[in-house]
Length: 282
Image 1 (cartoon, rainbow, N blue to C red):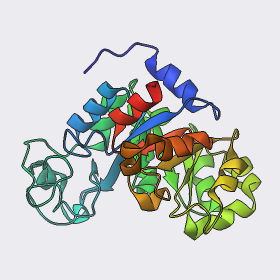
Image 2 (image 1 turned 30 degrees about the horizontal axis):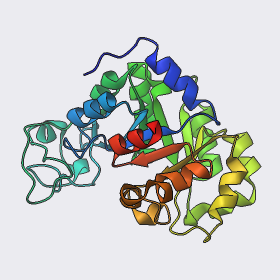
Image 3 (image 1 turned 120 degrees about the vertical axis):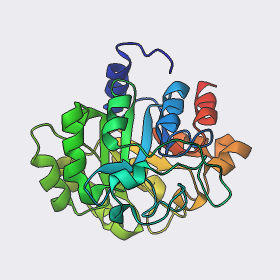
């Protein structure tokens, strides 16, 4: 791993807290193009690339251990099979993770499934973490962050009702970092954006939209929150960002990543971190 400057995280965290700050790059499941997704090697690769944040998927084993796995089952990504929730941590630890994004033909790597605790200790002082798939176990996830001294490293997110979110955030001595997801199912939040901003005070709003005008105007929505919190889009697939995706970006970055940036987006989650970082440097 590259040497990290002692003040690196402080600068990154300060930037994250600036609603008008530079575009920040989020590595989806780590650098899974070159290492197994949601594993230590993928996370180390992403840190070495220089990303600001790494997205991970957190699930709970049968015996209560918090581990990284995107799917409900281990079938796609490991040498084993079965639901994470029905397997013990020792059973999961005996499995080998498959290369890249897995699948039937993917090679086994010898890499193990990491715990959330292991990952938070690894990234401490080096990168922020986007916590996915774990809103329903948020209390246990928060406890791991508390125990590892990384509460300010982890970004919780959900599309939950404001009462539920507020109850979680306001019950903690050290307030968790939080991002609100807005998509078709909860577009009603756009009718009163001030309620979200004043009560929840999200560090970012993540917009998920299949097209630019329905069920809400994405440009108008960006404008509602611009300068008040960070604006986040996901560019992994067309259906998440109205076609302004990684695939489009690799052909014509101005109509992919550049489309969002021109409209005030300053957080982009991507499968192509290296290419996005190169584009931003230009």
